[in-house]
Image (cartoon, rainbow, N blue to C red; front, side, top):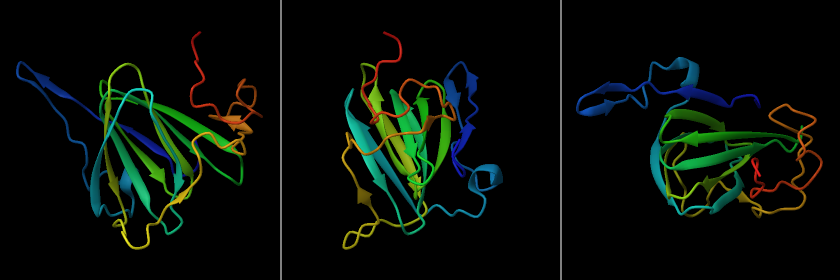
Length: 167
């Protein structure tokens, strides 16, 4: 995993009424460290849509929690050319810490819309957004490894969000 990306599974406390989960606690030092959450956002995405690529150059960190559906989250480091791919589902809750200096984005996979709740360490500045963008299908985004795997068949090729892993 790229330095600073952390995946924290979320526990479900189930009873006959349903379940309860804590999704954020200040004392989760393994996840938050010195980060302070200042904004929460909700994203609804239709199936098979891609929201990528962007990064933050002013120190923002995002914490991602898929509430419904399934998303494929990717992060790419321009320096090392490493690409990390994480599949996150509302059926198996987890919070993902995404340092903003990596190019990142996601695709809603499966046949239902995805609902993503995310928290940020910087307020969105409407007059000067802290977002650099590149197209989701940018042919210059070519990983040298995927999740640390140098022999992944997607290495050395422009990243394909629509690659079907189980044909």
